[in-house]
Image 1 (cartoon, rainbow, N blue to C red):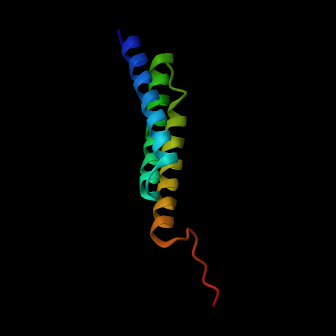
Image 2: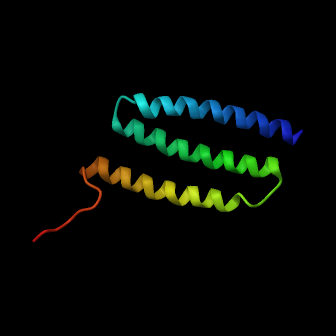
Image 3: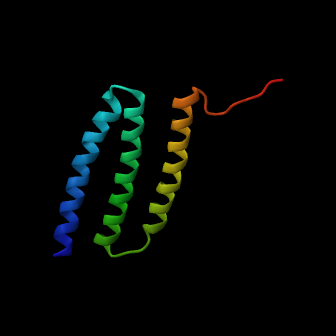
Length: 93
């Protein structure tokens, strides 16, 4: 039973990824694109978790943590760029 539910969840998340890719490419504004990219990362974490359940392994837990860390850093960088227009500020006094 758990195998069928996991496969169904993978299919639904894959459809969600396709819709989010469309939103990331054709988004009306840059914040919409940023939210779509953030959600794509969360869906990738979910896919890795579901694959770990499907394959009955704990090897993918490190991948989930790595995606989460990179997703957080990327979200902070995109938010800073959208707010100030620059990611790394340099004082050239």
